[in-house]
Image (spheres, rainbow, N blue to C red):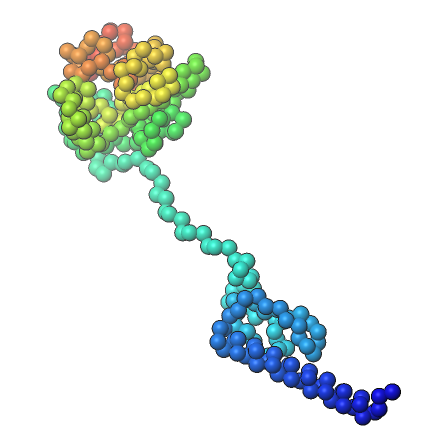
Length: 293
């Protein structure tokens, strides 16, 4: 049986070993903290208490072993989420500016029944009608185009009824500014269209600038804009029969080029009011003839 001295020696030896290992652990953490400041997630067994100790990966390591199992909270954010678990921040969103129709910068006379033509221009090329409103997407094949309030109200009623009757008709062009019309005509001319003036009004001469004219197309031709094929569609036939009920009339009908100055455009309609539209149709007139009286 071991002697008493043996037990005393063993106790001294074990105590010395425990103190030595604790000192090594202190030095290990002290060195790591001073050279790196941060470390990967670490778990160690603290020898004196037998506890598993972890420390937060993105924060400086505390040198006091008694505090190794405590994650220091940020005094401002109280954020204790480990860095490895944090999600990447969303990139800043681009500021979206909502579209709005142009507004008049000065007072104009209401030109909605002005008799525009090949040789008659607006008295003021900067003209912008009052009360322009964006055409809802359900009625438009293009985005961000506008009409005057009364025109849009009657257009919506007309196209809604056309849909009920089995015809999907949408707007491909509406209000245009003087500058837009300039670019449109210039592009056609540059592309070799020698008769561009017969199908595209000169800037300041366009009914589109009144905010009461629309180019229409149908689903049967995939809403192709200003397409002569529209003349042969069921949508075009429906418009010829019913457009006047909503105040719309073809501005440039067939076989009237000598009067209107423009080729036949079955897609181009102008809002003139229901009573006027009925009178024009009854008298077999063009808008030009009616407004010249």
